[in-house]
Image (cartoon, rainbow, N blue to C red):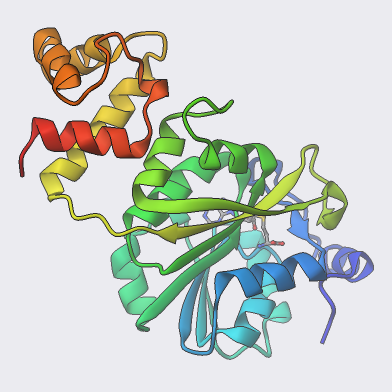
Length: 283
Ligand code: SAM
């Protein structure tokens, strides 16, 4: 079978199929065998795991996933890649390719139907232009025991950031509400075709259990969005302009929870937002 980590093989394949890259879809295909092997090892995928891959591209990571998992559901938006995938995955009986926009999937339902396994994982080299919304919906779905992503290094830094770090933002706090994020290793630009302009890295996300009610959870997420929507403003201002409570109620809430009344959202971690939401709403 063809070695898709060989740049010469990849070039021959795409030329033969007359495929041209669509930059706006974030198409950078991985050609590093060691990066693939390390991703698989980190993800803990075994022959009882159903794996979701977003954006299989020409199937390089997909083939590796197929060799280790019970089944792989690979969701690809670009119709032009389907004939290439048909060829490269022809000997992978446990892979199904779905021609869909991953952002439009009803994930819990999709996983129930496409991957009827107890243990589910997601492992993907994500298109950079939708990293944050994709990571968010994958976490919100609460279907996966591990999530392993190859992303732009900058996106990994943002998703792993803590209060006080450069790049700490709403997505950093949302990610830590759902999971424990970790930078695993860096991947150089030479490991892709075409070569991206920026560095990349692999990160893992281990979901954390939360015992909040649905209403409290919604409030945590609304508080985080409100807190970062106007970064220069204090939480009393952002909470009141988002309609969460009045300025006076926000000030009382902050002081009851032991925070200064002029504190800004960027100083708070996911755990702080949880504390505030639970104090505002008992159940
Ligand atoms: N997995 C392949 C690899 O590692 O070589 C390709 C990764 S490439 C960074 C991202 C892939 O995601 C491309 O194949 C692109 O067409 C696909 N893609 C982009 N937007 C998508 C979307 N909304 N839904 C599903 N796939 C998408």
